[in-house]
Image (cartoon, rainbow, N blue to C red; front, top):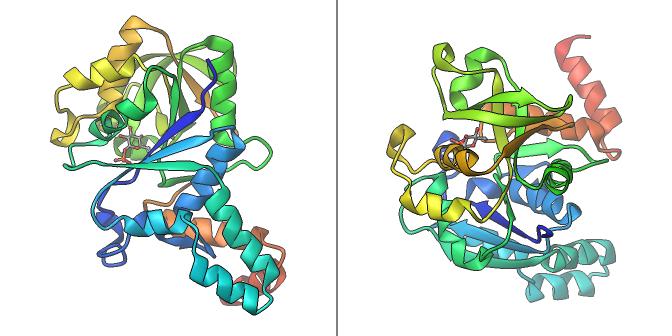
Length: 289
Ligand code: G1P
């Protein structure tokens, strides 16, 4: 069955970015001139997703406004003859069908996914986490996962090798390799201590899941941090049906982290034709090289 729907859990409080996120969503922080969430929505659309549901919370209204049409702004741009910008604004609101549901309590990522159950129904679906911005223009990360899903007919998690000292920030998996990039997941643990990690393979914020995850999530007890963890539910799922991992190709930026966000900004700026030369010269000057 084709994967058409995606869940974007965006109810998190963004405490790592305070005070910037005190009254506005972290998903709206701009990388150069585009909010983080738009990069991720564009990745989903490029992978063939045509319906998205945001699992939101209080203070997230700006996300809804961003993907809505904006008649006042559009009229203004039209009057000023700013055709190109006008076009770009219309493209945002025409990108994809978007739905919203509220996660009323911060009970964890697993609980957020469960909030979208009625919308997803009995179909396979994608989950995209807005903190992870993955630069893979030739073959978007989610598209790579969907390729694995279509071939192996099971849930797929995006994986990346990370330095072991960082593994406690991620869900971590044990695997049996099938090919260079595809593996079967044999065990999973959410944010393990370095000494207890089964490998250095971290789960990155892209998933393709079968709907069999929902009844499991419904029964899932709180895990790490007292939250209902998606990782724990997928581990349980893997006892009933094969779950795969995909070592995706592309450069991931952890934009939930200040340094990661800074690196992503520099990286994307260096790729933008309009200012890459001047920006390179500026950085060289500052670094004295
Ligand atoms: C979540 C997941 C974790 C995963 C990570 C990827 O954690 O629970 O398994 O590795 O996203 O970004 P969070 O970063 O939301 O705490």
